[in-house]
Amino acid sequence: MIKSEVVRKRLAKLDEYLAFLRLQQRYSFEEFIATPERYGSVERFLQLALEVLTDLGGHVIADEGWGTVDWHSDIPAILCEHGIIAAELRERWVRMIGFRNVLVHAYLDIDLRIVYDVLQRGLEDIEVLRQAFARML
Image (spheres, rainbow, N blue to C red):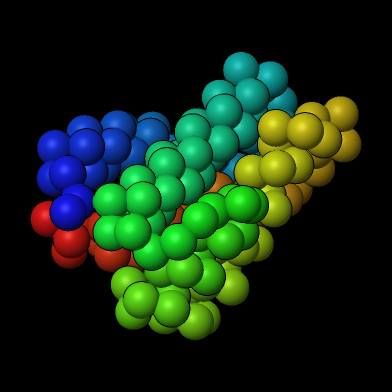
């Protein structure tokens, strides 16, 4: 059985991250890249938001006994198999996991244009995933 308090706590933290990220959407690309504190904060908050989703997914899978997660990319696949998310969202989430991996492991090669694009266009996918978990409460 899913522990609702665990889900609520993580969703509240995700809401914090999304609120910060939405505020950063107001900047033009030139303003965004001009301030290392701005783009560095966006990178970090995107990473944290994606970590929350992965954590929530793993939590649900474990609590429901839906199998073993060997890779982060297993999480969207398992949740899709159980009807929690649609196949299209599964594919978008797998790409988000790849982006998170770049933020964490390939930090020397981060393209700020991609970070800015995710900030401007990717928050909707995070929000859709957030709603999927909120429906489980």
